[in-house]
Each structure stands twice: as structure tokens, then as C-alpha cells.
Length: 168
Image (cartoon, rainbow, N blue to C red; front, side):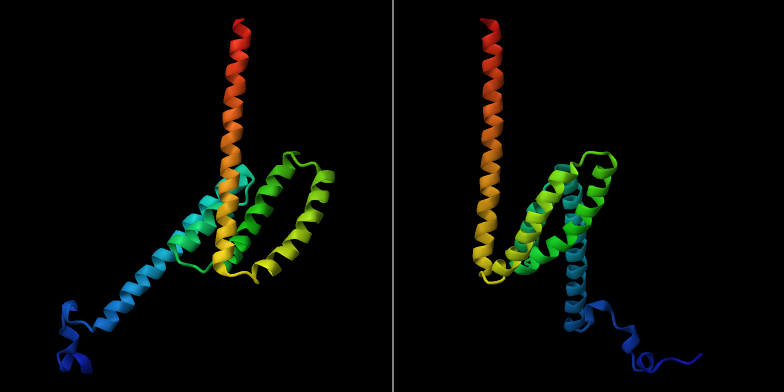
């Protein structure tokens, strides 16, 4: 049996501890890239699940993870999120339509206005600095969180007032 040129020179028997540092770095980068892609897949799966269940699209979850954790630039994160969400919207809409939960008259009106906003939005977003877009996104998330918290507090207050009223 013939030995390869590398094994004749003893190169084929080198232990991993003596590997070229550059090849080790390539291996680490490959593992990081695989982990990054797995995290993107897990994020989009979770966002698709929550987005279709709650009717919020999923970008609220994807964009912060893409930008803060995966270091994807804001403009790219928004574009990637929208592409991922389009499949969620089509799939979940089909299910809701099949269950007769969609008012088509209202849907057509909302969609026509949404399309107009979807044409204007990216054109403005692409003119903004990433930091400005991140700030706007953060402020919108804070506002929505605050409004939902206030709504929940008001409902609790009304429920307690109703109980007290029944005791009188």
C-alpha cells in the first residue's frame, strides 16, 4: 500500500495541538456561524409561533435578537424580519380565513392602507441612520408595552370596583 506524500514526510501524524492557528480560527468561525444560523432559525420559529398566535407579526422579537445579539445591522434586520414574517402572515391568515374569522370588507380596507404604508415606510427607513431607526423601534416597543400595562391595570381596577359594587 502506498503512503501519501504528507505521511511520508510525517505530516499526516501531527496531533491537533500542533495545527496551524489559522485553521483553528477557521473552525471556530465556522462553529460561530453555524450557531448564529441556528439562533436565527430558533428566533424565527418562535417569532412565527408568537406572531401568528398573537397577531403581531413577530418582528418585535426578531429585530432585537438580530440587532443586539447577532449584531446584524438594523436595516438588514428589518428586511430579514419582513421576509420571515411574510410566510407567517400568509400561513396564519389561511388558517384564520378557513375558520371564518376574517371580515373581508374590513380586511380589504386595512390592507389597502397597509400597502401604502409598506411602500412609504422602507423608503423613509433607508434614509435614516441605523441608530435613529433603533431608537424609533425601541420607543414604539416601550409605548406599546406601557399601553398594554395600563390597560391591564385599568381592567383590574374595574374588576375590583365591580366586586365592591356587588357587596353594597
